[in-house]
Image 1 (cartoon, helix red, strand yellow):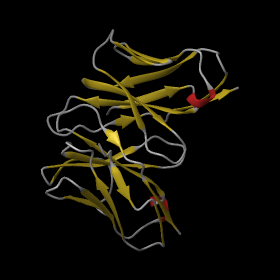
Image 2: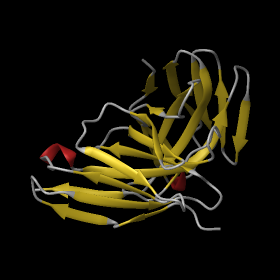
Image 3: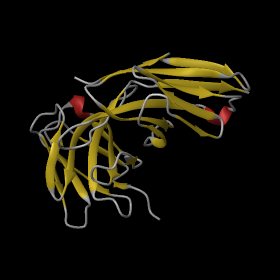
Image 4: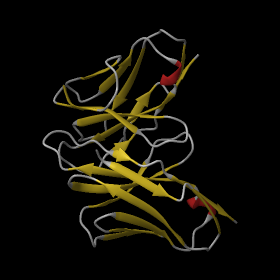
Length: 112
Length: 112
């Protein structure tokens, strides 16, 4: 069974204080690892897809990296508008379908 | 380019009733997946539709059923509602065998 564990559950940062969120995963065969941002009461917003170990992707203050067992979302010099819940999900190589298995998320608060 | 749309935004039902939620996929997408997200948790996969057939199903009872129409839009039906069915119901669309799923804003279902 595919499993995703995210840590920490919650993180408080001061504006400009860089940090990283962790996503550990267990999957039979990884097709892709996904990062989403979710604001309260809204649907997840797609950020990145990573396909293989060693891959990195960047978008503004966010950088996602992938190893064979975990992924990191690095946040550089965060701003208050980066406050949200960040979700990690994996998609396994399957003969039919493309379900996502999500972690519980990391709730990030950036104080001005 | 319209993204994924869902209706209604909010819904209040009582135990034992039935509910139908609707989803229109992102333009060009032909696969629709449904997820249930309880408060403070990550989304849980319900099922996925492609070519008007259920292709993959998560660990949800038969009270949860769905349909996909020729224009790729989809419905989620839940019968005999329980208090525990209260959640945010998310629809995501993608290209079949494509890796990135894009989410709609969700429908907040409250069961009293």
